[in-house]
Image 1 (cartoon, rainbow, N blue to C red):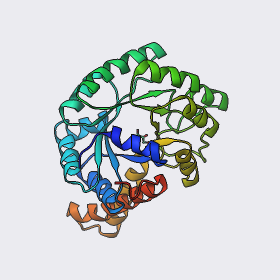
Image 2: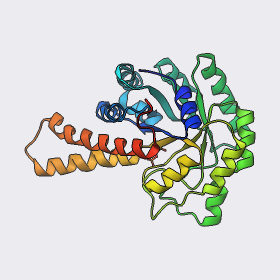
Image 3: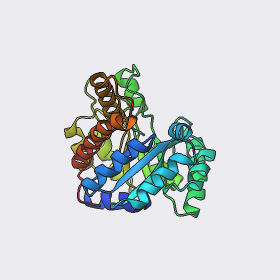
Image 4: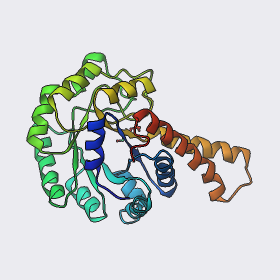
Length: 283
Ligand code: 13P
């Protein structure tokens, strides 16, 4: 069933688990995410970035995800990932998203607040919750030394002020996480996470969770992360499985036969994440 993310994340925050937010670009990834959520009886967010919206078509991709959510046996929210501007947020509202992120974290503090407040006013008017970000969640490929890394992380006091000033529903934090696969083992700053959790009342979001070892995910969930974003690991499962299948069956030209093992591989990744997020059985 189609729901908003607010009810999902408030329940997760209250009961000490995290809801998985998995990125989709197409029908096959969407199937894999929803099948995994149903198999694990877990609530889930299917998220679409501005790039995916452009690739899939702003009318088509949300329609596929919306229909899948409506038919699902578990609660599903459709989330705009890293909304880059007000116009994209408007497109998302018009096409049935039930959860919005406005990412203005690259802007100076006051401008970030102003952008987020504008989106909050529009989204709340139609009952849609909003995620915002403070600090800078980089790409894993960025070469940054430790002191610079810390400067990019979310400051607990600023998180509290930002939440107050922004009036949004969920906060994405930068605690040593990065998008894409990590070079070496990531080290999340759990002291920082606890300090933020103690000062901020809204559910907290962890981006860039592909490649973070399971034990660190468990620690993050235990310290109050309520939404966890995964994209790269699902893409990796899809592409490597398709490549392997095509290598083994060079004559195959039926895309359905090539996609089948890829969908199963993606579903397995999502099911595993749902287990470590402790959201299995919560749907
Ligand atoms: P990964 O690609 O590292 O899983 O990050 C996904 C994400 O945070 C999307 O917002």
